[in-house]
Length: 283
Image (cartoon, rainbow, N blue to C red; front, side, top):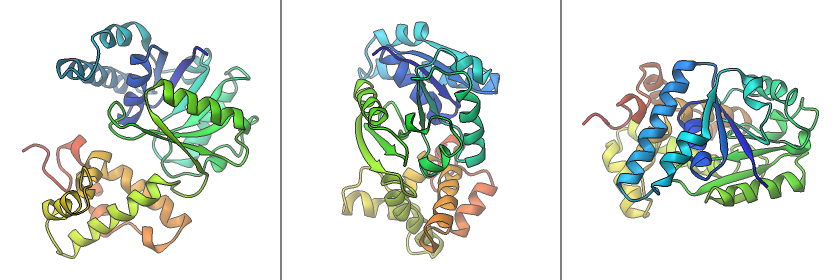
């Protein structure tokens, strides 16, 4: 079926999701309360597309698809009225996400699919106050969205088979590879990835090795394409901290955020997006 996709949240993930949807020919609306953030996101999308075309990784027609198929909207309900799929990609805040979905549910069609890009918050919690939780699903993309092939599809307690099938089909149509997982803290990917990431930060705290050496250990010793500290820089230290807080509360002490992570976030050293994280991205 032809989908009208609305992406809520024009940060790094939301912009990436909107880019992929538009490039694949979907009428796409990117929504954010900040007009400035929307303008920044569109600029980033256009730059990413041009970079992909220049490298031969993105077809020439992607430029026209983005220009003609991507629109922006700062009014949440206006952005969602004609949507057949709504994908939320705002920060990891349970109350914020629930508030958004309750407002969205008031205006969307009965057969519209509701999805969250959450990387840690249980889908069943997000859907708890919805009138139709059967159409609510987790659709966890990975950064950078245009490059990373995986989409983690999460089935909540009330998610219908039809919603799962539709999400899996959409993932394939976006040229992604979906996996379907049970609704549990951190799902499969965040739970596994965060264990390595947090331990790498603790090792740096303890002076076991430098950030470069720790990353090299995993890249060359275990054939990881990217070391855990470099990956944390790419994801965003603030994002990693937010996920760790959720999993620390839900699972236990192994996910307690290291003090070094907290200190770096407080200083505004958030990784690649600010130019400084565990590595210097301005060099």
